Length: 114
Length: 113
Image (cartoon, rainbow over all chains, first blue to last red; front, side):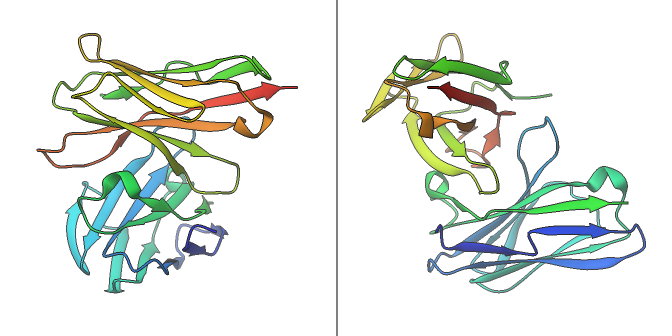
């Protein structure tokens, strides 16, 4: 049990749908991250939140919209996605933005866009 | 442009032997390197790290070697056990820079009994 949970674990959506991915951490961490892992590609950092403030957006298309209402929860809102957005979306947390070696990952949400 | 590369997508090793996973990087600003291990249906878990001021870091059966001149690092697992079967990701970051973890594509390690 890593202390980072993600729901749903699997999601299938059409290109016109709107859905949200949820991440929750029970570790008392202050930094949270969204990563994307496409098939045969490295993990790609998407967004970083530190103390509920977004500190990094790695040129992610606007059809992905993060939300961090508090330091324990992180959402990724999805709308009008494309089939190439199908991937494993991983959430992670760390004590703070500098604690990169101690990022704890959730199990991921496997997303399929039809 | 992929800054961290793991050129072997898969590796198969006999139980009890040594497993060697390799990673190459191109960005000379990277000064901290990490290995993560990932089982199916789970997120990656941190395994071991090394700072650029060292060339070796050991933790039990796991040793990471860093060759800065060659921009190469490797993870040695000895002796290999069936529970080591997983995908291993190499990652790097520049502590003085953006501190963004850059991951390799991963190597799937299979330990055969």
